[in-house]
Length: 391
Image (cartoon, rainbow, N blue to C red):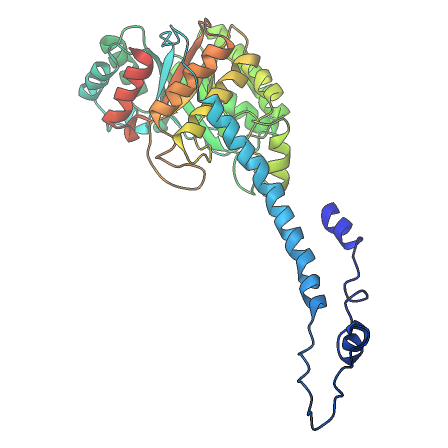
């Protein structure tokens, strides 16, 4: 807006200073000593040239320049960002930037509602043998908007945990609880209500009583700086710590540019990112934090991999060494707004994770990747994870 107003305030006055046209102009322009042919109705002399309208062309030049300037202002930062991400994807990962045995896998609801049985657990154990997967986030929700969760949502939880212990000793089974927050619309969970937070805590206690060995929360869209969420995490962590089990959360991505979540939110109503400061506040309140480093709007593998490298570095800078930091890998394939399957690939994500780890804290022990999600994964996804990270 300021640029438009400035342009309007410096008009050049093309109409006032346009070159004169018509007979007067031709008389003034005639060289000394040359007589112009008289004009008459009969027109015996040479025909007069058609009058020109340079003023009209000049009137259109300024709006065109303004439009071009606006386009450049929008495109140049985007181009610079893409170049920077491509540069972030260059180089070689450091030796040893491979699995630390702290990886995780998100599992769908079929594992606790009766659709999966012991044979499926045995097949999963075969799949995970020799990888770094230590935690299974099993979908036991979703939570109701008031924070409650009926026990009928996870009837086979105890049997699943027993089967995992039998087939995969040392692997933990956590309850994955999620819901849509009422942060961008009239429906959803209201974390600002004390009764809702009380109910969420009660639901966490119930799933732990049923045999789960930890609780993993995924509440979206969660805006940066949400104090009610931090207060809820404080209460949840006291509960899980008393039971000796982990509290885990899925997190939004971190601002690639400082304050981007505020700018993006002002224009779209959906901030998308968290500030790095808020990410650190969340990370200090949990035992595990898994970055949902997919749905990034990137169009090429190279820029997506560079984006993941950048996210990894930003997260490492503010995650305390006592918290497990996990970077999400896209084990799913779909094309929609914000996600391009040909760009967001497992090989690109794994390479980005290793580059970010190499440049920031190559020896960090409490670090891993989280695979999203079991029911959409392909053989190629598993092979890329094994070859690039778990070998």
